[in-house]
Length: 219
View 1 (cartoon, rainbow, N blue to C red):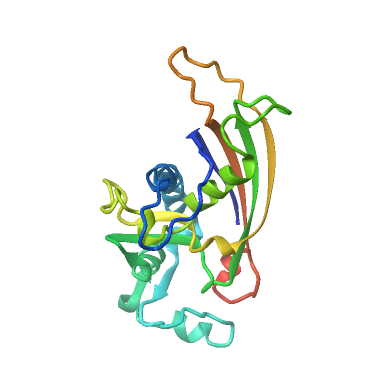
View 2: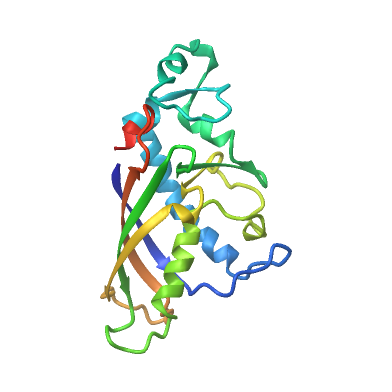
């Protein structure tokens, strides 16, 4: 499965990870980025036929739909089947949210990212907005389900955020990424001196690492 996500706005460098009992100072910023991706992924789940029409057996404790037992699950009564996004959201309820990740370990999926990174720094210059590596780390955090301390200040989902769509269950499912950087040529407003402004185009390639009857839909 291949598609593109886009982001336009500030992208600041990630700071040192907060401990579980500490407030992450970058959490509100990261969640603002996550909200942009939520809207795009929500549309993907609505318009992609496989994601919008597939149902899952609600009593499947492991969600391991291998070839050998797939037929038995497909034969489950219709009233025991849930739409896919509802099935996933019921398994990732935390901190007042129902998260719906697309790339999950249970489905034997990984993904690769190809990122076009347009920023206001001139190529070859000192990076005023922070180094690229730590800004990419913040971006990948915005693509996954947040940890509990990363939702402080955003404890309740906003309008249209139930469920909340994210790309990744965990950032460990990103098996590779490539970043191409260039200069963002949009005119700078007189009152806008924020060097962290970026435009990103993220090409997502999702692939099964172990084939099952279910995840053939992602192949």
